[in-house]
Length: 119
Image (cartoon, rainbow, N blue to C red; front, top):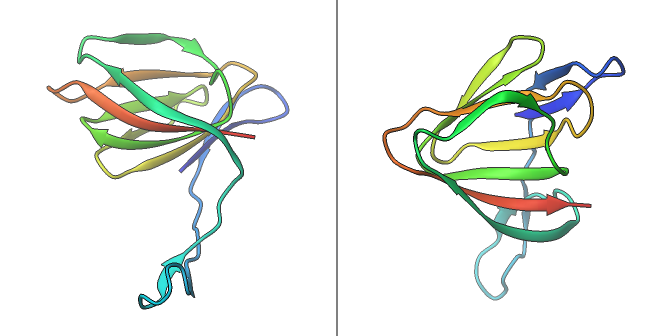
């Protein structure tokens, strides 16, 4: 899922499909299915408790890719569309300008996200 801002500054979701191609990733092991995504600048972990308050609309602080490791969260774009991101889901955050989005943790456990900052 991709979250982006249009030319008017309104944020929207867009489902994206990434094709995986067979490649010799770790020879002599058997080929794996891979996809080259984006150049990365850094990576880290983001965590928050269930009562964390992200209800004030905000743009993403930087272009980044989130992968949920524990817990679940819901993002509401400024156009009103909401999506939940459970364990194993990925979100490409590109709404670095404009009205932004709101975020809330929807799990009973702390949220843990693996974040990759993109170029």
